Length: 169
Image (tube, rainbow, N blue to C red; front, side, top):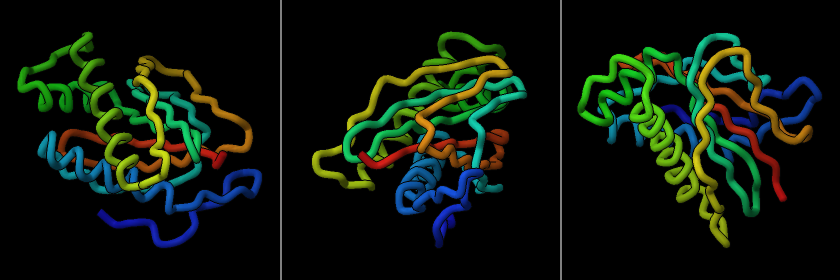
C-alpha cells in the first residue's frame, strides 16, 4: 500500500491535513483487510470530503480522543458490506442484518485499533464504541476546524472508502 508522501490536499477553507496522521489509517486498512478478509484493497483516490452520503451505504465510525480527537469511518455500498461480512463470518449474508452491522462495526474497530498502535501517543489514544449508520442522504459532522479526508479503495469485494477527521488537542 502506498503511503502519502506530502501534506494532504487543502480543504475549502485552506486548512491542510498532515499525512503523518492519515498514513497509519491507510496502512491499517491494508493490514486488516488482507489479514482478516483475504482482500487486497487498492487505493483509488484521496480527496477532502464533505462527509456526505448521497448513495445508499452503510458507514461504521469510531471516535478517538487524547492528544488528537477525531473520527475514523468506513463507508461501504451495501453489496460490499454484505461480501465483507460474509468473508468475515464464513457465512453467506444475502441481506442486511444485525450480523452484518456487527461485522462492519468490528472492521472499523480493528482499523482504528491498528492505527492507534502505529500513532504511539503517550498516553495512548482512547477509542469509543463503534456506531453504524445505514441509508442515504446523511452527513457526518465534526467541529468546524476539522477536515474530513476521504480515501477511496477498490477491491475484489467491492469499492469502499475510509474517512478520517481529527484535530490536535
